[in-house]
Length: 186
Image (cartoon, rainbow, N blue to C red; front, side, top):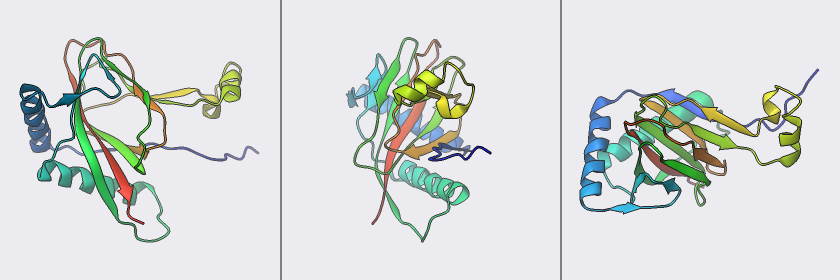
């Protein structure tokens, strides 16, 4: 009998909200016009500075809370706070380098536009011995990376310590997403 230990997970739910998606695209347009942009993990794409919009923030935190309730079993009632959020736009030839999100407990992303071949999020595993075993077994515990094929309205959350990247986009259309960090109030 095989006993799985130290399982890791990414939570994926779908929240279709056309009004929020349109608002995110409008904010992206304004931030690009005003040059409120930065480069952290993004390569050849666009990443806004942190945005402040009560309606978008409420949507994100409500979706986050729903994901927690549907997918985890808290030991007691938990409260959390949205630390920050920003918009990403990846066009053909853009990607995001491998990174984590320090100073938060969970991170996540909500996909506003996801054209075909626009780059998937990839979670990296850096245990060298497991990577060597991946040459011999199909079992997921030996994978060195796990790609999630994203779709419009998908909402992902994961522990902020997970190393992740976004693969190269080969789409002529932009992939637009909003990323965020959440902390549990202790």
